[in-house]
Length: 400
Image (cartoon, rainbow, N blue to C red; front, side, top):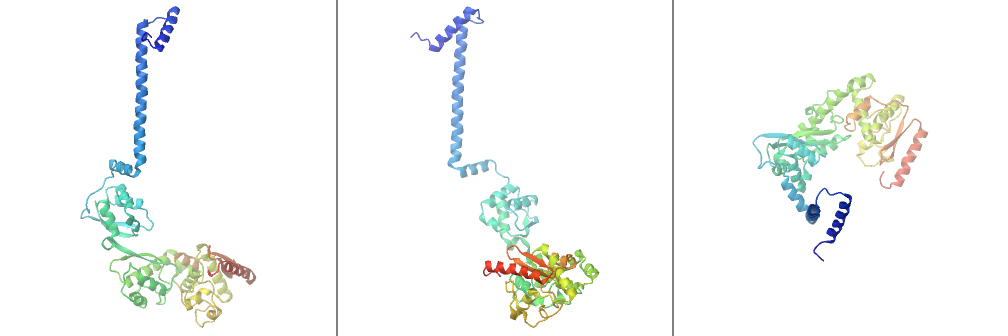
């Protein structure tokens, strides 16, 4: 061995070949020096690539070992801006809606100037399970609060809630509304206050044509209750809601154009609410009622029997119940019951003065899960629908 590499011997042979062809732009010594430089650069490039792979691999391994720690580290690097402390003396009203996500709440707080960034509040809420207990309400918060302080105040409703909310579900009797109001944590009424208020209709601001009876005139809906409100205040919110709803619907005018007394139209709406819970059926039920009234046929509505004996939660009424002597018994007496049997909502009121077009005189629920209701013109057609309900009830023991 003479100290010359195999590659150099091969290169020398190549140089001899090139010399024979007359291709000698540079000397043999120069070419050999240039080749050595090229090899050195290639070797360094391979080493640099290997080093890069090792660095990337180390980073990936670090993330895989502790993703949580890596996330926290990244969040510190990209920290969301946040205020410090409990905020300024300036307050702002913030409304949180039912079902609002923490991200949406965070955006609202940022827009209102309560927190410095929505992202900071989101992170605080994410790490505190109590954030899931934020209630739908109107809140009084401070501007420029830290996200943690804002969350604490949202959870401390005794300090932050501006108003509370009370909901009257559709088609509830005044007795049921009294019970709901009395138990309401939002209203915080003394014992018996709701019943006393309901028994004094003159103080509830009922429409002049309501015959001094709140049954049927307490519009279902969700109402904001100011602090320190009493039972009269809450009930007046619902009677005011009724007054606005009938004005929006032109309820009185439409009833009169159909030669229907507005008070009787409210009774019809209340029966609709008690007999079906599908909006698409409201106008059809109204038509059945008016068709029966027109030909002098008894209404025979189980809902009016339930009003007499109390709700049973079932579909049927017993023979004994249907024989109960009462002006509300539409199996025994012609025409409508003397008063509404619950408070209908706006859609039920609308249907009562906008009945569907049809010849139906019967209807029955045939599926309690879907609420499907079948309508019929003749007794024979109706019996077939009743058979469908009977079959459904047999297949679902205890449901009817």
